View (cartoon, rainbow, N blue to C red):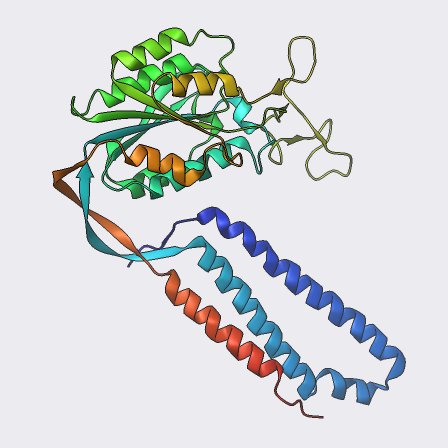
Length: 352
């Protein structure tokens, strides 16, 4: 039996449109029924409620529900069926160093810094073609989550499952992140271009950056930074009941007020985290790279990717990988057919 996977599984959130739509229809029918009770006799009411017009309406609602369901699946981009793909190889090794510290839970970037970082990272991987890529996760310490590979599908699947609890030691130690990234890059060919893509809010806690920059330059590596967060900053919601919402003296089923609980310092003040643009700028530009802050157009996404594409070159070798086929076009066709059918059906003359 073939396994079905989804390229964008988090788009399942759009399925919330289904119960909302069904609820609106049910409320509308309920109100219509009560209005009808006041003006129609019982026999006439049964004829109106169960007559041809109501059957016509029920079919139209079913078509709309099917369209919404298929649109949600379409946005999730289903894939099944396997085939082999020949991928050219470039003499470029890229390590993505992703910050999963508590500060990445801040919601100054929708829906949160960590979710935005995951989205940007996956978008970046979609632009790769022949580069080997690996993944390092860091907070108070760092570790290699995915070694250098051409298997982008596996890399993306690991990114989807990243959580802030994967490292118990909290904090933001960029030094260890860069050390671990360099160690992973040095497992590749010595003559390959070495790139570190640092995805972080840049909080360094006043750690001197000069030794980091010196070490990166000594290893002939380049840092490209993706700055996640805002310079205005935001509080850090604590993970807990209901995604950061904690109940004080209540169980989740009890009625009562629910309040946000945020990280506080030793004095009881709420901790605010801000994007450290200066640190990310220094780390990237002094190693020959670029800084990109999603949503700010000092350097756009495409220009950012194009700058990295200029590095390295294609080799005479390549890899053959087994991947799944995109099937979203079948759903797109089904949605189109249903929408045309619903359009035609809604304009058919109704029986009186």
